[in-house]
Every structure is written in C-alpha cells, then in structure tokens.
Image (cartoon, rainbow over all chains, first blue to last red; front, side, top):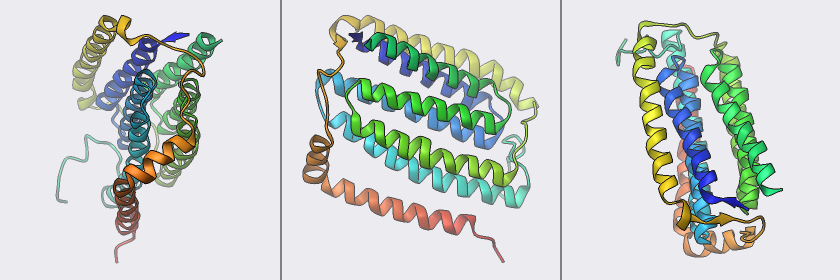
Length: 100
Length: 164
C-alpha cells in the first residue's frame, strides 16, 4: 500500500522542477521540453485522483491532455523550425523581436 | 512490493527531471525526459491505469520525444550559453519553483489522512471501461480532438515548409 499523497508529492516535485527548468533554460527546445514535463506531472495527479475517487473521468482527462500535447508538440516544433530558419538561433534571449 | 516499485520508478522520475534541469545540452535533456516519461508509465500501471500506461509509452516517449530528438538533430542544437537573462532567471526561477513546491507539499500533507492509500490492483480501469465513457458520453469531444489533430498537422506542414 502506497499513500496517495506520495504520488501527489512526486507530481509536485516534477511540476516544480518543470517550472524551474522553464525559467532557467535558455534554449527554446529545452523550454518546450520543460512544458512537457509539467504536463506529465499534472497527468500523474489526475491518475492518482482517479484512483482515489474510483472515477474514470480523471483518466479520460489525461487522455485528452495527451492528445492536445501531441498537437501542441507538432505545431510548437514547426514554429521552432520556422524561427531557426529566419533567425539562425535557438536562444530565447535573442528572439525578442516580433518582426525582423 | 508496491512501495518498492513506487520508490524505484519515482526515484528514476526525479533523477531524470533533475538531469533535465542541469544538463546544458538539449539532446541530454530530451533523453532524460524519455526516462521520466517511461517511469511515469510504470507509475500509471501501479495506479491501475493500464491503457494510459500504454498510451504514455506510445504517444509521449514514442511519438512526441522522437519528434523532439529529430528537431534537435535537424537544427543541430548545441550547448546553451549563459547570458544576462540566465542570471535573472536563476534569481527568480529557483526561489519561485521552491515556493511553489513548498505550497503544494503543504497542501498535500495537510490532506494526507482523507486521501488514503492506493493498493495494487484494488482499482483497475480496463480499456473497456475507458472506451465506454469515451465513445458513449464523450463522443463529441473525442471527434473534436480529431479535428484538432488534423488542424495541427496542417499547421505544422504550413509552418515548417520552406518559403519561396
């Protein structure tokens, strides 16, 4: 038997590391990956609460988060490729102008 | 047994996430994110979410991370440099993330008695249960997400296309 709050604290750890990485990382791909880490942490919380309440809807929510994350990754990486093509850099500090 | 598995794979998750935080090369960060996602799949299995565990491996550590590593290799991303922005980010980022973590842990610890325990196998959601809800009650949202995927694919193609 594992207490549910172990899972919740694990997801809090992962989410906080994701927030820290999102703020600290300077490479746009690493920033994007820390967003994925935060999404995964929230998914773990959903599954833990689905287990606690014996409800399927928590898992359905995780399913939809996965679908949206897949769409987001495809569009986000395409945007990153477009940015790299026009500016030849991936550093978020150098991508600070809306118009070239 | 449950506790041992939880600590092994939870520890792998935290180790992978910390490695993502401290690695300066994006490809190392991507590989450690794959470790995190695969260990999370095992944790989903422990919580009785067998379909989500499979979907986690296939969609996240399979499809999404392959896309990430492919883009990292395509753009030939090297080590990130320390810039002026990174000093400010360290000053704000680490205390901010620590404060968020402390708040969340405080909330979870104060509710630890009503939350109870998770036993291995005392709640199992099969694919049948999941698909009954998904295809009967939530059919419209499910179809809308397929439109979303279609739009995302078209958008990705348009954005990544070479302009003439």
